[in-house]
Length: 141
Image 1 (tube, rainbow, N blue to C red):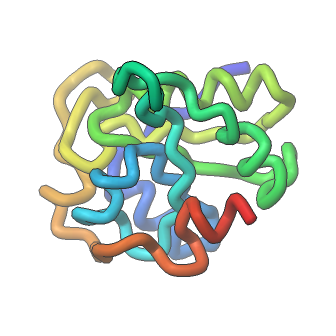
Image 2: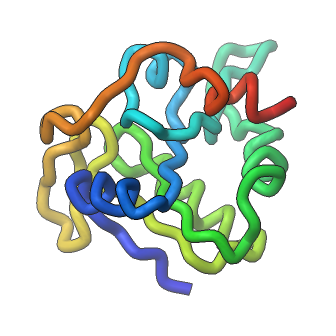
Image 3: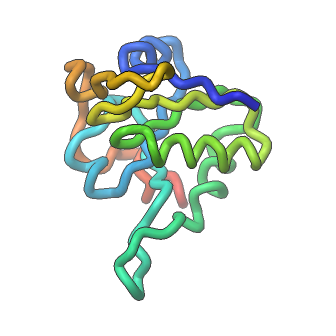
């Protein structure tokens, strides 16, 4: 399955059309600023024993609890690496309509491999804090 890769402006337009944006960055990154209206489900979390990043063991289960496999989902991170890996993992789990917001928050490669500005640089709507009912803590309950 091919995973579509779009830029931040396209992601904003799709959010306005009702397509959910799942921010897969860490808790700290998300709280410092995230696309307004996005959901926070981190792909990676710090390993309690080493402090090194590891796959969030709840990532897939929390996604499945809130979004059916046929639902279109956009995934974004800082610059496209984690969101691409998260999309691949969800595709293996049966999700069929996934979109990777390649430039993410800070900027990164677009679908042609050229640098594209991220959400923040495009001056799109931003929120700070944990995201309220769209925070990872709320979604995992």
